[in-house]
Amino acid sequence: MKEWQRIAQLSHRTDGSATILGWVTHHRSSGRIQFVTIRDGTGEVQGVVRADEVSAETWETTRALSQEAAVKISGQVRADPRAPGGVELVVAGLELVGASADYPLTPKEHGTDFLMEHRHLWVRTPRQAAILRLRARIIHAIRGFLDDHGFVLADPPIITPAAAEGTTTLFGLDYFGEPAYLSQSGQLYMEALAMALGRVYSFGPTFRAEKSKTRRHLSEFWMVEPEMAFCDFEENLLWQEELVTYVVEEVLRHAPRELEILGRDQEPLRKVRPPFPRLSYDEALERLAEAGMPLTWGEDFGAAHETYLGGLYPAPVFIHRFPAAHKAFYMKPDPDRPEVVLAADLLAPEGYGEIVGGSQRIDDLDLLERRLFEHHLPADTYAWYLDLRRYGSVPHSGFGLGVERLVAWIGRLEHVRETIPFARTLTRVWP
Ligand code: 4AD
Ligand code: MG
Image (cartoon, rainbow, N blue to C red; front, side, top):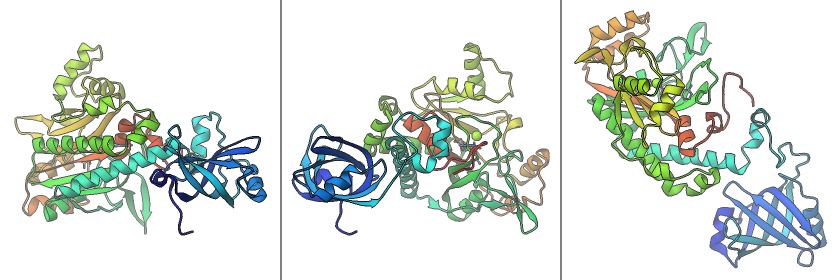
């Protein structure tokens, strides 16, 4: 298998010979000439096969090709400005590597259920492959930013004894006779690691038994969770807007082809620049009331409220200082106004809702114990977490960025299920 080229590199080999390994996406013949389009994950190229330029065997093998047959083709690369990668391949030889009969995903339109049922094959289509490349680019940018700013990658456990984000969305499991759960968030462990390393981040899967069937919810999703010692609420927001802006810039710089395949208008992304607007929860309620969507103080936003607020500005918007009553036990109350917490959600524009949730954490032992009690959480399960407030407690903050929501917004995709290779949702755990 050595000495072959990937399709994306072919444009550098004009008038040279090349060998390509890939899969057939289209095939048509017109008399003594056949056209075979091959994809290999880096791009697509059209091979031109002429009856008088190849052996009879190659001609016949080509004739018998069907969609998704795997092939090895070799020939001469020729510039063709009309072709997608600017080149075509004048085929000299073609071998079948793996046949494909009755491929279920035909070029006609299929319904989403059918496509999700065939997700293992659907990922081969150009649009889905572009989404996965975009996701990889976004993850690369996130990690690059954090690595370059002194954050240490430190991964929390996935099997945990306690809830971080409420007890209603836990996936339980039997851990050698003891109850345990799949992690909803690594945050509590990240707080411990921040006290050891200063600035840390995790990047890993998190799990929530979400009973809601929306285009924003998965039951298994990937989260980036930075946590910083000696960092207050305001500085936490600065990190978030710097990170999100950097990711968008990197995508514009390195993934324009993916955005083009997705039909993503780049103009709105170019308007993403810090500082992001900041609206307090109270101000947000006023805006919602003006728009005919009144809420009483203390009520949580629904998807429609988030969509409206996120649409008020070209860049993402922070909604901050939520009523403490409905928020997580670990969030620090605002010293000037203890009925609200120093927490913020970052809402994306264009109807994508919350992409980041973050807060300054309670650093006072007594207050944290009281909050656990008020949330009916057993203090002994959190004993190690309370230790962090016993031994050199410091102001600290962090946030969780949902990778799938970020990919959905940047790619302007309809549903988060297309942003992850194999989505897990309320109704799907297959394939
Ligand atoms: O707002 P959340 O629940 O925050 C936390 O878990 C904190 N412990 C994070 C932290 O401060 N370290 O979740 C954070 C983000 C959300 O803003 C959203 O982007 C994403 O995770 N998210 C989901 N994404 C897909 N499907 C779901 N069911 C999600 N739930 C949250
Ligand atoms: Mg949240």
